[in-house]
Length: 319
Ligand code: NDP
Image (cartoon, rainbow, N blue to C red; front, side, top):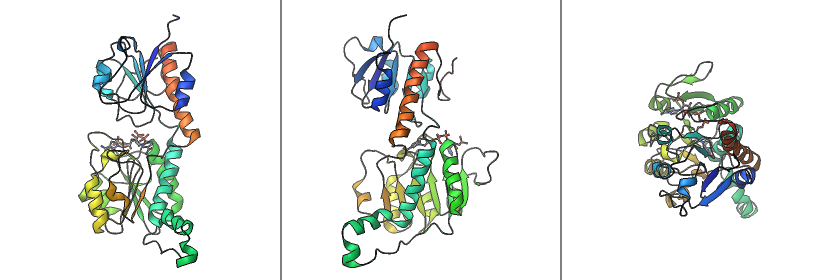
């Protein structure tokens, strides 16, 4: 039919998503939030959602004609996919197109954390090199390290490949051992934390991974231990992380994601042994463009012939 699909966009999304959809669908932009707030008469007309953020059961239940939720990002913990599945609504995400970028950023964050390169550059920029002399030696190094990955999926495997030439030992913990990998498998996160001294978190934010990185895990990494998080902030007990970093029970941490981001606990900012990034692991123009294209193509494919490129496992695959 000539009737254009109505696509709801709660909050901000990469502008390329809107450019790609323009003219092909009708866009309804509304504020993001836990409670849906739509203009009068709009709720009954919405067929799709394009989102980078929250779509909970309340949003889904407010939209009787909703068919598809296209999430901008591979992590879709903001979308209630189980609830969508119950209503036969398809949820899509943006896997694979960001693997390399996120893995690159993870290595950079790891080295920045271990070698304190941000502080070193600040030393130069502040004129202290000439005024006060060389920057202090970094207490830590990658030499002789054992690295454990919590998560060995699409992105975890790219991180592991990049770690190989760094001559570190590599292991991982997931719920099920993966065939065809030469890395050491650990059946529990605790066992891995005891065996390694660098832990990289790249699991999705789920009820199971919620605060899985706790005082016990961080303490097991030890005083030379380094914790890197590029997964989700929800996987970490941040009070325990702050406590172990302050006491020296944990050596250092590099964080791209936070429990209540964009709010970052003030206490992190004054610690010398952290490297902090504002959730930028995939945030380059080329990679974000590829993610935007995937969001648009999932929506356009669905309304063209009922096909999507990248449905999440919880929701029905058609076409
Ligand atoms: P995949 O689904 O390909 O991989 C997820 C991995 O986590 C699998 O190895 C899985 O193994 C493991 N896993 C899941 N649940 C558990 C659990 N309870 N215990 C142990 N292991 C678990 O996802 P991707 O690699 O594509 O992405 C991973 C996550 O990274 C995303 O969900 C997102 O949250 C985050 N991310 C963050 C970005 C950033 O900007 N910082 C950018 C991109 C992604 P198994 O099922 O065998 O347990």
